[in-house]
Amino acid sequence: GDQVEQSPSALSLHEGTGSALRCNFTTTMRAVQWFRKNSRGSLINLFYLASGTKENGRLKSAFDSKERYSTLHIRDAQLEDSGTYFCAAEAGGSGSWQLIFGSGTQLTVMP
Amino acid sequence: EAAVTQSPRSKVAVTGGKVTLSCHQTNNHDYMYWYRQDTGHGLRLIHYSYVADSTEKGDIPDGYKASRPSQENFSLILELASLSQTAVYFCASKQGDTLYFGAGTRLSVL
Image 1 (cartoon, rainbow over the protein chains, first blue to last red):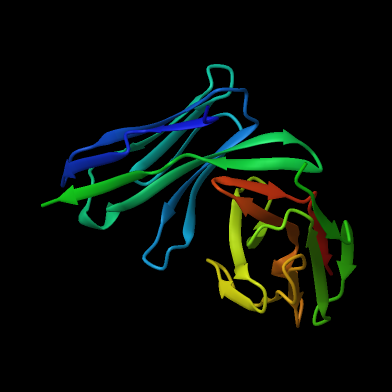
Image 2 (cartoon, rainbow over the protein chains, first blue to last red):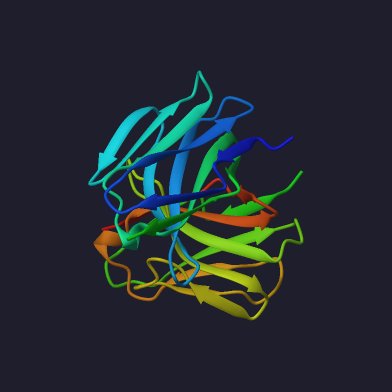
């Protein structure tokens, strides 16, 4: 099965509200990154975590390697937050490691 | 097993000099990527390519050029290296949702 399970696949929020995205891992991962796909299709790095939590503006992310999950919380959502969000988990050792992506969450923020 | 080989593994360059980082994959993957990683930060995409003889800009392409002369090879070129380009550089090829990375090149610009 998939090593990285991301949910939900789609999410609709009204401006000013918040919610959380989640990624579950089937095995222990070394670190996790959260990305947002921009209008050009490139992935913008939002967070990189090897453990614990990080916060940046209205976004907050947590990673628990032991419990095998990571979350991305969005608060006070704005229209410009709409887009596709991906988590990606690091697996493997030095010299031969992988970055495994979740399937993405399509976020739509409505007025 | 998927194999991505980077060279050199480390390099010291002088400011204003030209640096070429090489990447070779034996996976026959179409997509290849160059990322940089700075201490305490995640990967940031510099350039990528989905077919030989074609490259695309990533999120932070300024100061870098890329070359994909063949399916197997993807180079990252710093024409005029600067202090801010000191970082670890990773090459990757992609299959499905999984990126396969090389071991990285540690570049120090002095």
